Image (cartoon, rainbow, N blue to C red; front, side, top):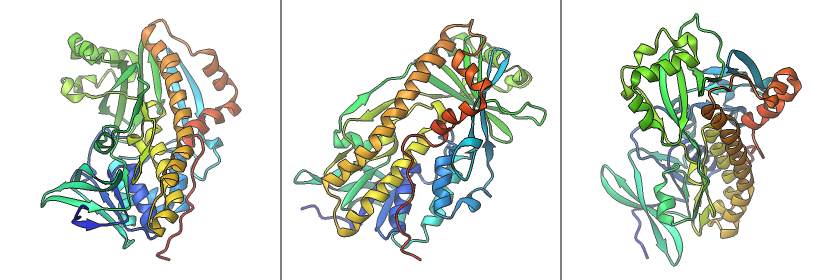
Length: 408
């Protein structure tokens, strides 16, 4: 039997949104939880920075929303798009049944620091920075702990349940040898920033023109730009040269023309390789995968962070009882997958449809200069905008906090 350096009830690998939220909710309910984060802080760029109404509702249920909204952020209340020279409104969050009727844009490190600061008040919560889980410990076919590399050396943490929340490149799901269904994606995304000026027009999220497709996100002092390209097309973009890339940006969003010279080289551009997949089975005895470790999402709609948080809420709701009783049974883990797999499949199906029928069409045909009939209908009939707003802002089968706060 493995001799562990230490023990806890639940060890969560990954300090992203899914891991931090699951750890917070479990600790809040009295479950001794350790969250492992391989980096020294949360200060990393080009991560999911959208906090959707479903997540804001979770923060409201925890009593944290007012404090959260005091953290600097930007708010998106409608999703609009420029197609050619026409601007259309696609979604209106005023119509979603939540307290906060907008998407909040906030650096993910601010979101994580906010949640962790509140989680630290629970004596059963422990987050370890610079702690990289490298392997699983198993006994008699069951996962019983993790091997952790720290600055002080290698440690082993024994626990009743390991939760893998370490992202789409999850070390834990690889070590667990869980089968993955690769759905594929026809696009990749180039991320960059350009200065935002007070004279700039109001935000329109999507811009489609002359075979180009990009998203423009208001981040206060700068625009965060997601420039969509064909899968594996970055080499071709670089071969055409940075001057041509600047021209493409200026042609698609004309008011940026006077500042694209700030892109000095492709060192100012980050490649996001878009990946859509999901595990066929999210668990093994003693192990559960959630968030991107269970299902990598497309950046379409910025839904990934919020789906991961919904996984975390469901995990706490379903597993607090078994963990407090001393063991998460296989049927408890299977139940969690059954609850969260349908929202994952449905969301991925919508993302794939948008990628193939909207984005890929826009990239493949430089004659697309007007919105299709569906988007024109949404623009003409405001009441219909609640449908895409609900899908983006809340999603399929939203979760609500049902776990207690034992510190009260």
